[in-house]
Image 1 (cartoon, rainbow, N blue to C red):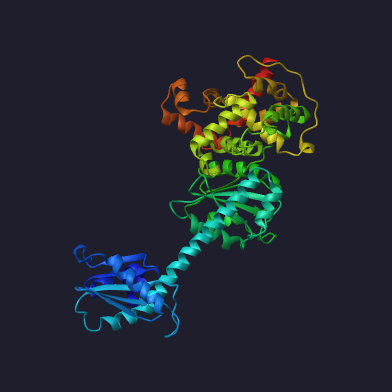
Image 2: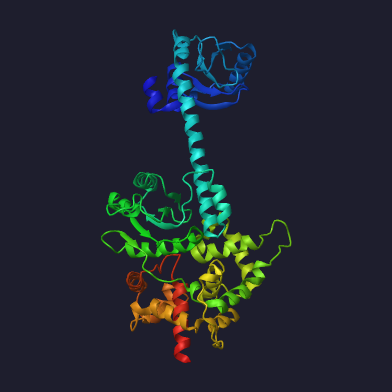
Length: 493
């Protein structure tokens, strides 16, 4: 009994009892509902066993006794309430052990059942506690995921309120770290992360990528000083098959920017022997668009910001903004991030495109919307206060991209574009072709006259050179489109 309690649990014990009784064994509720059951063989099933044990369980509950038996012409049902209380103290609300055995009842069977009550009760309690623990773990995981989602959409105050019930407190400023684990090792890596920094980081299982852990870490080391080893480096050293990408220090309100940086660093780390990389210094384009860029972003997003749904169940402006940001970051994986059906996502994207006058199938309009959302989430004083330059829309661009051209010719934006493209200067054919083909590998490979695997290898090498993720979202394709567009406009001026 005790061996089965340790190895087989409730199911193992019931199967063993059914064999010893040469009949049926199960757990039933006080109302006679069968909770768990096992039979020796299919032929050993007792006719109307459910009615027989229900009758016995009802009588046992009504009388408050410690054992009860029901005899029929061919079978006997023996019932014992499961309880870990001392003898004589019943538990009428708990389940009942019921065994149906052929008559005559085997010698010693009743004593055997009385003896098995205690290990079976403990087994059932342990399994119940384990289910509750899993529910608590799932609730905590979903709570952390919700806090991360609020941070990614810029709702800082609400995120801090929700996080107040969990530990640790949200740090500020932070570094965002993305750890790519192998196989099903994410839980083990999470334990390593907790041990490495003493539980100071906010650890979230990524809802989009099943092998990713996201850490929102304090920007400073665990123990400031020359001997301090950052958490991300410790994890990369201790877990031999994980890959780690880390952002620059960013304010907590800029967690979304930190995540993008960490994801780009992860693409670089995959190609390094150390399996660890930190994001290289590169300003966000939202910081260099100036006041004119902020006015352009406000004008572009205004129909979305002022949208009032016709029905109460339709998404409002905040929900649509969160949908747009998630889709731009994760593409089709946004369904997992937002916890919505793909048809719901498609309907919301159609509505967003109609409100803004954008064709969200075009990379140019995607880049314009992405930049506008990033400008909106950037504090106004952080933007470069250089006066905007005049410009005219080029042919073949939408209204949104055309209005953006005047922003992309600003000197600060041109300097930003030059820094983005400097690593591939003079060898940007593959990059330009890929961007021109809307970031799709198949059409880009056909235009370049190479195979799809060959194009993928080229883009993988470009990821290392540019220190940006290209093939997996969040991708740098929006920034690269903006940089190439800025350079083309400058060359044509």
